[in-house]
Image 1 (cartoon, rainbow, N blue to C red):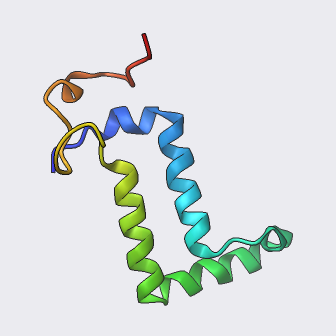
Image 2 (cartoon, one colour):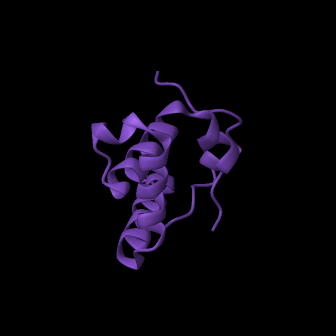
Amino acid sequence: MMVDFPVRFKNPWFWVGVVSVALTAIGLDPSMFTSWGALYDAVIDVLGNPFQLVTMALAILAVFIDPTSAGVQDSKVAMTYNKPKKGE
């Protein structure tokens, strides 16, 4: 799979997507922010649940995939970028 990970990692919206997917998969509830222990327990529950773990992994994979190219690989043009392309 040829994906330009360094460029994706530089894009803040990539991180918004990954974090949002992970927090949704954990089943985050605002009351979980009352303690680190509660958050830790929620993460452990996801890691122990094969269905949640697989669906979270697939959702995070979807964040990685460039929807403008076929398959899961970046286009040859996208692979030449050194930073996320700005709108024109």
